[in-house]
Amino acid sequence: MARFGIRATAALGVSAPQLKAIARRAGKDHELAQKLWATGLREARHLAALVDDPSLVTPGQMDRWARDFDSWDLTDGVCGHLFVYAPAAWRKALQWPHRKEEFVRRAGFALMAWLAVHAKEASNKEFEAFLPLVEEYATDDRNFVKKAVNSALRQIGKRNEFLRKQSLELATRLQQSPDAAARWVGSDALRELKSRAVRAPAPPRRKAVRSR
Image (cartoon, rainbow, N blue to C red):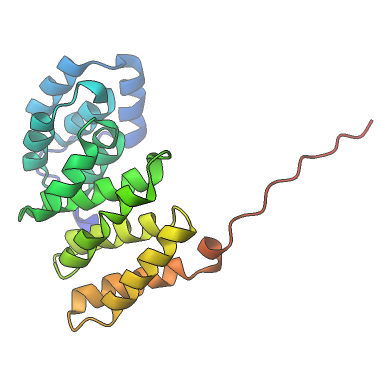
């Protein structure tokens, strides 16, 4: 775990598939999630994100849990399994990048990336509001922040052709920045956003013709 940048000072070694199986048996339980989070154990906190009811997650809870983030896997797991579905997800995606704490700032950009994947009905305008934050904080050279900023930019750009062009323009500016972290964010994003897989949507699958 340490080799992959995961802090394991309070870990039990329970695997992700095992946690998901426990979560399926437990079902959604907001009160249980609070108790699991309070233990401070890594796996218990991952499980808390799996069993909590996102409709009951308040902005205050999001801030409290974000202050406890101490590794990228917990940050991304909680944002991807729970916070992205909470009513305040968009608000926190706009607020948290301004916070100085490494993993709280990462959480803001992780939410942007997850919203780009899951918020199917969201407008282009809502995602355009994230791009100035990407540009502002691309100069944060902390590894776990830099990678989250990059992920947000790539996922926003992959939503549709309009946002891809907006993201390409930003990535090009970042690539030309005098700041090393910003150059990396821009160059890495350009590599994916210019790729054929992103530029050309996959052709529709043809239905197989059954022989009689």
